Image (cartoon, rainbow, N blue to C red; front, side, top):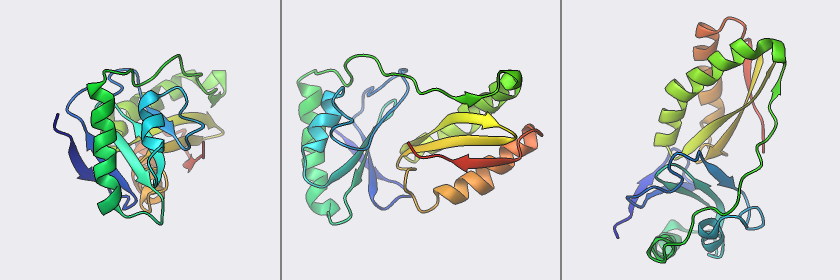
Length: 186
């Protein structure tokens, strides 16, 4: 098994591509701690490694964020070994169902929200996934779109600029009801 590694715009995060589906079409999963990862045998295995601070599972990639005091030279080989061991053992990536978070949306704005989600899914998410992350719609009220950054994008120095100058400008262009975009934390 060959696992490709790519850098991301976030220096604390690397993207690992195992050459097979990770989440496939099931969406994404973002784990900020070992406790949060209990439903994922893969994320649990990776959190057992010293220096792993966050695990993000994408369609065909795994993004790992390291702790500040950890060096990639030492951590990268152990991550590669952990990913390989997981897939060779043919264990599931996730067990059970994920509870969906409620979105903060006024039902009267359903058509606007559908347009916002379509733009995010077709124009933003593919680019963000290319950098090892995801962007998740969390709500729309009073002209404010609320989004959560995941994976490499969470904590990335350029994520706020991406939201304000890229995503906000694009949404305001196509959806005049959008006044601003705000980042929300998990």
